Length: 115
Length: 111
Image (cartoon, rainbow over all chains, first blue to last red; front, side):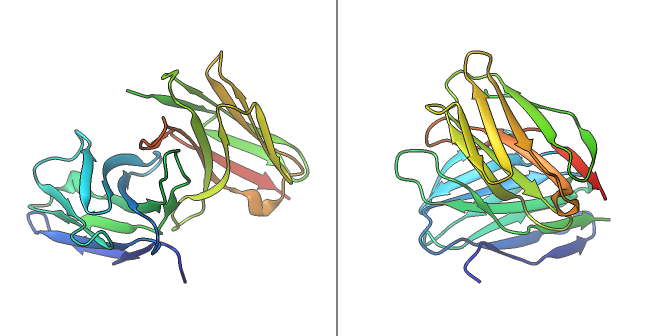
């Protein structure tokens, strides 16, 4: 399978715990995006990387959220001191950018439930 | 920043009928407009996209139209089939920028 891979698919955690999600993009893609999707809503942009550089972070991304893409390949998204409001589907997407906007290819997401 | 509105939120059609979903965007600098289909438990999948230098694009039963003046774009699905049932999202972006998504349309196709 050469698509975007996310791990884990599901995560249940207690309020106050830290969680980390992993995304493996399509191998030749230089852009990697994180989005968050709550029930009945469209994906909301969180942050994106071009290679290993984090180019933009949304105001939605509080100080408890941090994302990394250390070698320009896979990425991790960590949420510290989780809150019930963090419960959502976290989607990763990748694209190959060469000037023009290019199609985003999404993974199947990590569904986070904070109890 | 960009804002994308999508209508209707739900749409029910009989198999074989056409379905139309409409979106508006706010930023006149946006020039890329993809449509995604999302099935339960899966991530969004790109089904068709259009750039601002084109007014219409068609791929088999799916077509997208773009009116830059009015800042509207629409998805048209003809000869709908039960497997077309899913949530559809429109999105918009400027060159080399992030996608901003609409709120989605749940399409149900009844056999």
